[in-house]
Length: 121
Length: 109
Image 1 (cartoon, chains in turn blue, orange):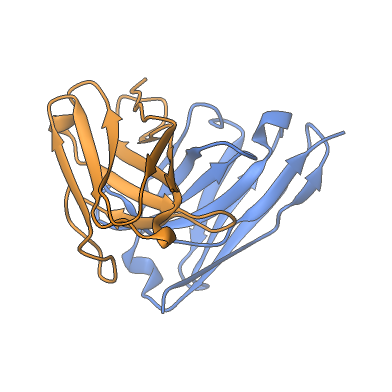
Image 2: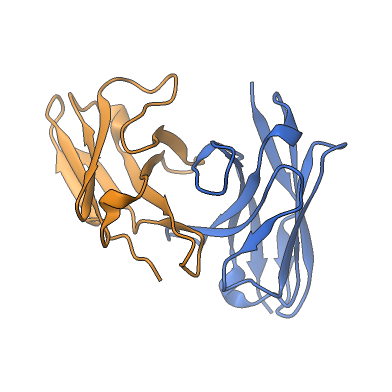
């Protein structure tokens, strides 16, 4: 079974930094692109960032560009999101999601359970 | 920025058909994907490429896409279908490469 397990969330002050991790199993990690999708409390889904299978191509929502960095370690079957200059509106449940297709134009066929990031003073 | 508009809520009686729309400019030219999210749970893919169903998703779930509207149809609705549903497209010109709809809460009466 495909498993995606996020970790690294917590309470952080505005302006602070946090690194999220997503440990994967049950599939060949380096065959798939991955993304981070977030959901603010009581709100809808918002795509945050994505990375292709090699790690050589990345993308970011304008709202996080320049503050967040996505990366992956194919040897460890893991995905990461380095977040800095955090703001109150970054407060959300952050999901790790697997691409369903091989190109950027695709969907998300597996999701983790999420890790909660709360930015508050 | 590309915008996907969904009705906030849809109510349906058990055994009836629920139709959830997703409106977007010329959305018929894009591939639309749909997710179901139950309270406290992660989203689950229910339709991809407008009308394909992942393995394990009941045939009661179907999709269509044309013009400015994509539609997710749930036939013979069951209590377990009560959830939030989101449409999603890829749009390279948007400020979010992947755009999600505003979400629709389906209530089974």
